[in-house]
Length: 202
Image 1 (cartoon, helix red, strand yellow):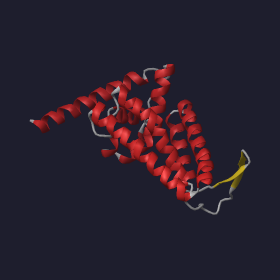
Image 2 (cartoon, helix red, strand yellow; image 1 turned 90 degrees about the vertical axis):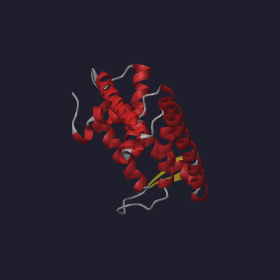
Image 3 (tube, rainbow, N blue to C red; image 1 turned 60 degrees about the horizontal axis):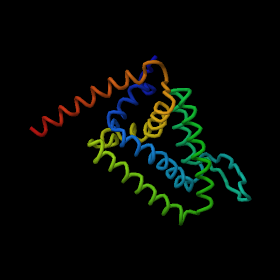
């Protein structure tokens, strides 16, 4: 039931999983990946609207906020559609989380204002990225996936940790045999990486 090309979930998951095979490193990423996505949405709130699309005004707790169809919105939309294409069930949940991040970040950005928001985003991004690099250096002992494939690592990270959480908590699989097939690919990738590492050291 595997898909091919851009929406080959096994391929994407195995690539990312080969760099995140240590349980502590996976936990660290579960904690930090979605805050990175959220704060990216937050700072992108301040980009100008695209294509002269209409604005949407919402009110929460007496505060009004404008939802802008800008770069942040279209980035979230691309992520959401891609995740649904990868796996309709877990992808739909991931898409809802993406939408929540976008709407919530609009409220937070509107409340903070740009002069404070960029400082909050900077601190959050530094903390989250530092935590992940520690996870790789101390526990995984392998460089992050983004050093080999920047786009794939950034796009897959939120969906990877969500699928890991669903599998760990509920035993969820996109289809029967998915995790066994992915783990086999991960094992092959790690073995090849270890062999290359030994050759470089010898």
